[in-house]
Amino acid sequence: MRLRPGRPDLDRYSTRFDVPAAGAGPSVTFLGVSTLLLDDGETALMTDGFFSRPGLLAVGLRRLSPDPARIDAALSRAGVTRLEAVVPVHSHFDHVMDSAHVAERTGAVLTGGESTANVGRGHPLPAERIDVVAAGDRRSYGPWTLAWVDSAHCPPDRYPGVITEPLTPPARAGAWRCGEAWSLVVTHDDGRSVLVQGSAGYVPGALAGHRADVAYLGVGQLGVQDEAYIRTYWAEVVEAVGAKVVVLTHWDDFFRPLDRPLRALPYAGDDLDVTMRVLDDLATRQGVLVHFPTVWRREDPWALLP
Image: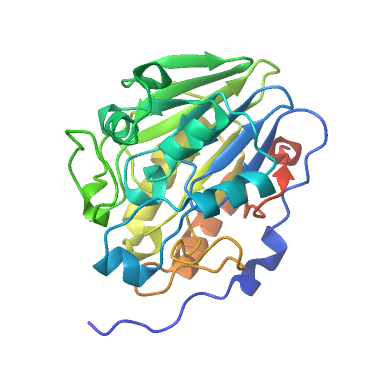
């Protein structure tokens, strides 16, 4: 099959980058791929913390290491000096590679499954800064509470399996195996709730009984699935938690550094236009709003709730 050249034009969706800027109170800041900063002004958490974003040639041909200069620049631009926890959604390089560095720089605990723990051990983080969780576990950080729910990576998983021993960079991209994949259900003491779905995969029925007003929905590789898969993914994630606002993540080309404008993944690996066509049909039928986040901006997705 001949690969389609080019990539989707984000200008088609320019009016969707409209999540309101946050005032006082809880906010979410999108920092590329599935990295999200959740901050209420007193207590802050971060998913993934991936900022190095090595180029495609490096990923394909070289051994990778976190880039301290890019990590520090991103944390500075986002105004992050202190985090309570860094929480990877799974352990591929584009999610977990920088997580231990971010935890070290911000005083955070690195929290995840055994694969993520082995990334922390290889850094190395001290044992008391690594918290291993299992499906069904909950942790509270100030007014934030996180619940870990079993999930799966969107097919195909190019680096399947688990990380079974401490991973010390430099290493090939494939060394960062997927490991445990999570849906994260996050609640705040003020009643706000959000689901962080970092990858466009799911475990049937896993989110039953969980509720979230807002879903940050990973859509990487979703556009190359068949339509039945996309519709089932929506049902198992968005419908399952009853979200009325959806904010899309993992659509950006993560081989491009964050100091350049974001662009969509190329058609060779994804098709955001297909994703939007199917999701918009589902959202319209169900009265759900679908938006894109604006990188670096503190946003209040709960302000969009009907």
